[in-house]
Amino acid sequence: MKSSRNPIRKKITLKDLAGNLKVSTSTISKALRDSTDISDKMRTRVRHEAAKQGYRPNRLAQSLINKRSRFIGALVPDLRISFFSQAVRGMYEEANKKHYEMILLVHDENKESEQKKLEFLSDIHVDGILLNTVGSKQLHPLYQHLAEEGIQIVCWDRRVDGMDFRHVTIDDKKASFELTTRLINEGRKNIIFWGPTTGIPVAKDRFEGYVHALKENGIPLNKNLLVETFRNADDSYKKMTHLIKEKMVFDGLISIGGLITYGAGKAMLDQGLRIPDDVVLGEFGDNDIVSRLKVPFYTVFQNPSKIGRSAIDLLIRMIESNDGSVKYDNIIIESEVLLR
Image 1 (tube, rainbow, N blue to C red):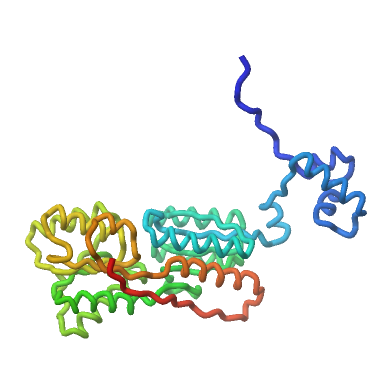
Image 2: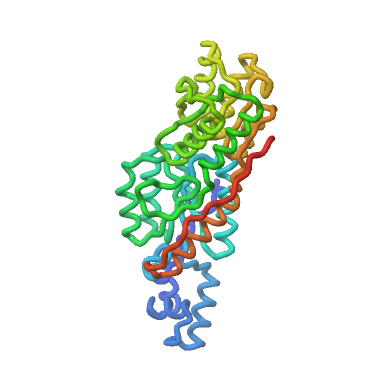
């Protein structure tokens, strides 16, 4: 009985075309590039044979020759969060308009994973990288090495302190100040800050905005209300459950992201707290996952699609300028506190 599987067909190469037409591979290569060294008749023959055999050029090999791949790599922390998926959509649409291909890689907030992804992008000779880092200073030498290779780097959503990379972000301090102030204006005085306060600059900035809002409204900083969590829903759920059982007094929560907001909110509801009557939630990202709680909450809408489009536009301008003396400005995208 014959197998129903189709046989694997060998990829057609320049050498195959040259053998079929009994000419050199150099002639084939020049004909496909429309070189004036090759006659119109030969170019037509080569193109006809290439179409007949289903020949496709090797993009990676071409990138080595031309020193330009038209590939852009984008590092993303977590596609479960709608902010990131919407930003990636904006990147893809803008890159497509400018005839660049996107290579999307997810590091899941893991330093070793980020390193492997960046090394892969270097190996395939991307023209540029949109970097959203886990925030480890141990990776700074790798970033520097990539830049020295001639790979353009733009940070998006999260900047990298200590490296001279352009970035496209919101003003996280200002946004956190406005979000915390919104909760205070609702009469909330015991507001938890939920998430890391150090590490990635975005977390530090959001913490500083929270502290500034408390100070401006005459509320002393209570260190017992600063709760460090891992960036996942399970850890957030466990820690919030523990705090409630320990009778911690709080009436508001400022969270740096959607997954941990969801974990904390679910724990509150499971322990019998009412949202927003007992606790008002405020978070960053306009995250669809928080909406699963089916309660009202405040969110900082960060214009993710605009961040993605703007980051791609800036990166491509840097790639195509070929002028190291040109200094590009960082881009700050407007944000807005919304009630959902």
